[in-house]
Image (tube, rainbow, N blue to C red; front, top):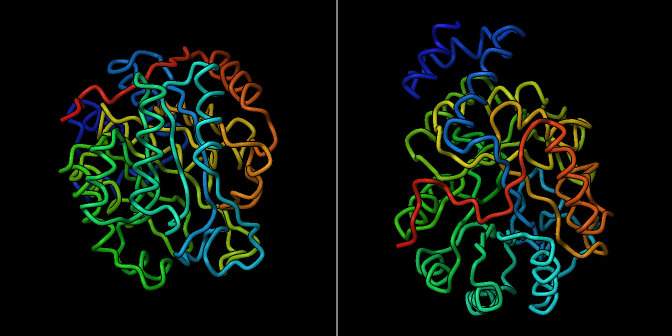
Length: 348
């Protein structure tokens, strides 16, 4: 098994059969060795830097009915909100003072924010903070819409593919097309974005073979960013009684992704920090190099409830940033507040 890890470390590739063999035979010694090699790879490309992004969750309205998500259209108990352009710019102002140079605008698929509103938001942020990167995470759109946002100044787009198993994808996403999801990712790459894909770990019905499909898909797509996190059930969804994913499996996947895609930007997600007090640190040790503290107004943070028990729902932005900075340095990494672009990306 160590030979397979060494091969992955040197060649940044394993076949599907080799990956399933490695995952099926994972033990504590192998996990430790895998993480060591992943961290070594991350340090080789990016040093021991961890990049900070300011997250702004600007709407929890969503037209989709994903079976695991707390802000799904069918959840009548969700307390809905939308941030105005002024609210969003206020968040950016606070973030800029705290040193953030990337703003991540995340929301449900909310048709209120049409192309005109999204381009206005992007242009306004860019006009006020031209040195900052803008990341969008607002779901599936047409090629033309993605192009408009890019021309307005958006630099990055996060669109997790969630699972590369078509049957599982469509079971979890009613009336959604797996093919369209994948096409959106290729459209984003063609337009010129730094593109982020990713999957959930521990979904009901997910197998190790499914993880291999995810890993092989990511290798083929070659995104600039990959966001993965454990599945965590939400009390007001059809999957409320299901078991959640684990830190152990999530960190193994992070390490394999780091070795498959050495230059990728890889977050230690909020979900990881939610299921374990030191989840984000575990993610960094496994090869992750991005964290995204919350810049949203404190009065809406609890309302952006994708899953149960989400952390950082009450901290002020400054407290959130200081707390995470302290934890990053204590774990042996250095904080980097720059834009933190993927080393292979330049704007078209």
